[in-house]
Image (cartoon, rainbow, N blue to C red; front, side, top):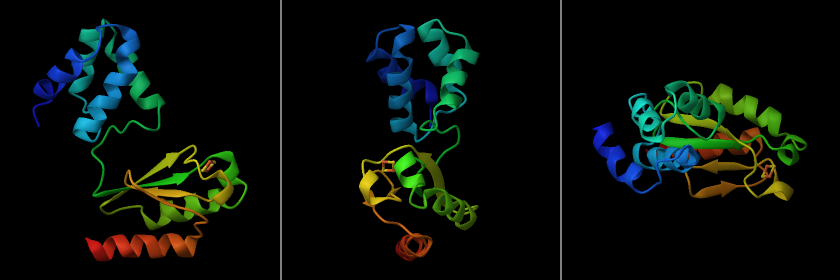
Length: 147
Ligand code: FES
């Protein structure tokens, strides 16, 4: 992917001001799947920021990926309500299960299913409630079978 070419319409759609950084990063990730290293200096120059400032924002927010995602993105909720009903154990189980392969495991800090935790999101579209380690394994098995 030509990062510079991909950035042209994104940068044109936002004001060239530092407060546009987050919306620009969201658009870059939507377009590229992650924030490529090569995008950082281009964004920094366009917004009159340092590379370190842009990189600091990318690395601060768990939402932003610095590497391309796997074939599927699995988000396990680490919010307080989910932690209170087994979310930490589920996250540990998920990390063990997905330590390599085509799936990307990411934390998220609320999926809007607080009364139905632990909650998991697979890709951008599918939410799952009351996810036990066993249910998690079944969900991943289904993904593997569909691939
Ligand atoms: S805290 Fe997990 S869904 Fe809200």
